[in-house]
Length: 233
Image (cartoon, rainbow, N blue to C red; front, side):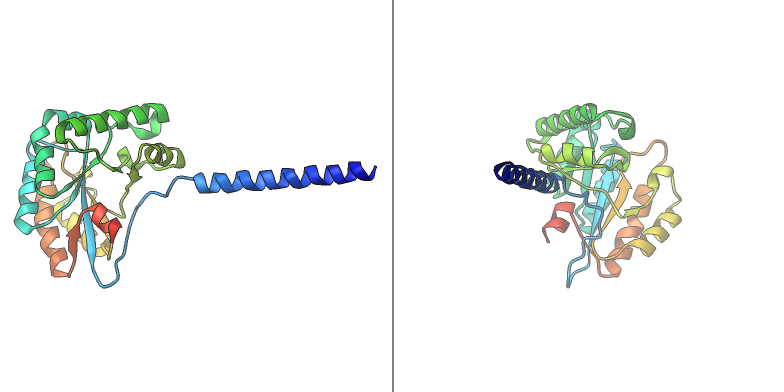
């Protein structure tokens, strides 16, 4: 009887340790949280401009011209099928010191598709960008900003860091330029990630807003960096 009690105690102890170890593995295996910002830097005022959904044959070129005029670098989250149609614009982004991230091949409604479909769309975009630029992106922004553990895990498994934002200009909704300026002025802080779009159907307010956003933030002491530079600091 005594041997049986000792044996049962040992089994219970072993089971408890096994459960604890499993829980510890699950915690450590959890995907990293998406980066929303702000990513503050002591002694510096940094901000990252990001542009989604391009390249667009008209607006992306205009935006690149404005960025070059002010000596500003940004991060472009590119849709693969648009990159296939306008590869020279993607190559120009990299040549001018900007960063290019994965925004999937087709920009499906992320909340309405399975993880397998999303992953294949990410892989297709990666293959497109690799073919166009010779470089593999390392940052991923899920379409529509849909964020959950399964999406982050899929991205992490592919070697990506998921990037969201903390300042939404709502330029995609054709927000008037004045509203965009007010939004950015009120909500931008040290380390902010600002969401804009270089591909918008119909007339885009983004280029006109950008011409005012950049000097406004520069006058307030902000330095513009890419997302990777923001994270590296």
